[in-house]
Image (cartoon, rainbow, N blue to C red; front, side, top):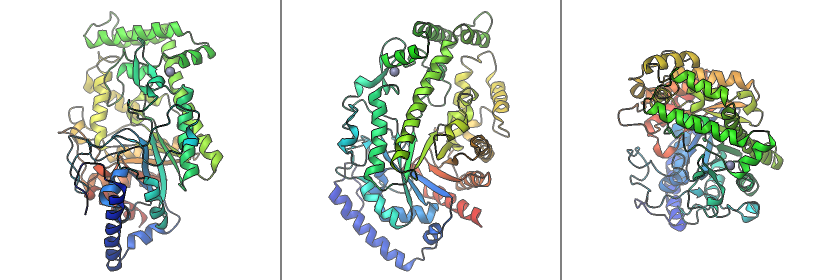
Length: 505
Ligand SMILES: [Zn+2]
């Protein structure tokens, strides 16, 4: 009944298999009391969300999957991936990682493409060259058309997850990409480019006007040039010569703000030299940290340029928010707040929760604790290779823990295998709640089987139960099981559901 072919499943065939699975599920419902679903339908309730992509509904059938999410995960809200070209939110398990205990056990590499998994309506894309984004992965399937009525019928809410992650195959994209320090085109879209801004507002307007959804969750994990130059995140290389964006729109924005574009470029070239020197062990006379800080003092344009990147990114968030609210004020808008915000103090300093809360109904704060161990260790290795190269990395970790108010976390060599603790989930949830001061809701993003390295932490049901309990006990307004159902093992999903029900007792 379920297709085991790793090819695009025609919509007709999908609907047929969905229908027969739904019939089977209906029969099972007659014999199994639906305690979970009725419990979940009673109001008021916390948002218990899950991130899920189109392929899971195609592979497992819409009604059976909704049954499973409600019964095992206590889920009452779908954060359905409707726009991305990235594999973090869409597609089956990423290639090279073991499949979980459900779904089709075959890689979708042959048909995974990404894009808009609903139907783009041309009238919303008049002001952008990005007109052709329909995801071809599942034929003519419109995932909102398929899932929305069935979820609504059960009293589940549906949000569209939209991610700023692109493929070079999109027509028109090449004109809109960022330009790096040495004038080369990159793969990311410039957030100051009017075509890009019009695309995002057009996309969310399309979803909010064309479908009876509950809101939008917007993802943009891109960092500014300072962090990228230092590799001061978890998953990126140290790319000091590839920093962005130096396009005409950025030059114009700089001029309007009185920022000297030539000084910006000179500063980032010096930073590039500093980073490359550090990586080849050329210690500056006064040491790495002093030389880095001196660069910031002598070229304050380095910070101004990083700030300008953030301004462009947050301008898009504001425009997305305002567009959605102008359509129907009760539609909810939320932003995914990336992982680096929790373990990099330099990044933390660039964000005020209160300011983010002013343009959002909810913030999904990433508190992925299992994969957090290897990610945090990676950050320490990167920052310890440049700015803090004079400090032994074990001491750097200890120092950083103090800055971040982390306690009882593993040592550097043990971090990838140990992951971060449930206490980390508590602390980050409490920090966010204190930061937003009631101006937006806080939904911690809970790590359920996010892929990690071979010897790194793999979550147990006990870990998952502890993380979910920690978020709820800390006072979170809800939570979002992440990153996507297609990589979660059912035992961990059920542990999350148990923690939600245990909390209610
Ligand atoms: Zn630009």
